[in-house]
Image 1 (cartoon, rainbow, N blue to C red):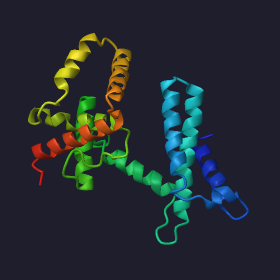
Image 2: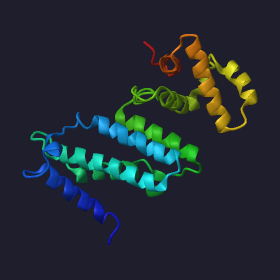
Image 3: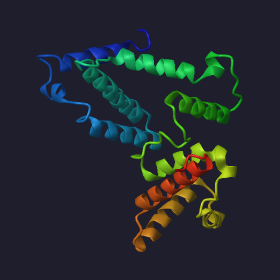
Image 4: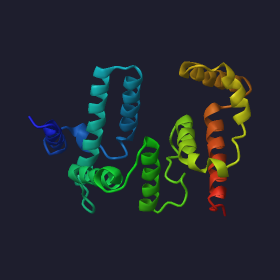
Amino acid sequence: MATGSRVLELVAVMDRLRSPGGCPWDARQTHASLVEYLVEEAYETVEAIEDDDRAGLREELGDLLLQVVFHARIAAEDADDPWTIDDVADGIVAKLVARHPHVFGDETADTAEDVEAGWHARKMREKGRASVTDGIPSALPALVHAGKVVSRTAPLADRLPALPGAAAAGRAFDEVASEDDFGDLLVALVDAGRARGYDAESAARRSSRRRIAAVRVAEGLAP
């Protein structure tokens, strides 16, 4: 059996579920109604990875794959702009080839950092983005969002002001010897902030927005 052949079976099952005589629940779903399930399955996949649960990961990846096939099947029914799972696959194949010229073309990239920098540069050109921070989803959890902002702006570090909390973070890290210690420090900070009436999620989001504003100044994009 060729690798990927069972994916075709999944497409066929979804077609049966959405077709007349199939499942009423599946038939009434829309892109919007499935959002909660997509988010839930993504978080359950993360949990399986963090728990090193290989069987659970396989199951959760299947649930995520179902969401992709489900959305593609709904899109295929659109009267004005239909597209299918093949269009989804075609798009990501083209994107991967275009963004890996060091593999499929004649460019070179010696390190993972070189690859990441080139990826972001090509993505900016493709999408017409002006800032390296453009395209970071604002709905990401605050810590994930902050990590994206810091990662994307690393090449501009010498043009940016130091993070306001950098000195305090450096002192706190005197007692951090592992990632577990780092996690304990983060939780302790959340607890200390809560005792003072601060909300960690909203505070981190505001800090990230201030960092993005500083980045746009450094890029010459500030109004």
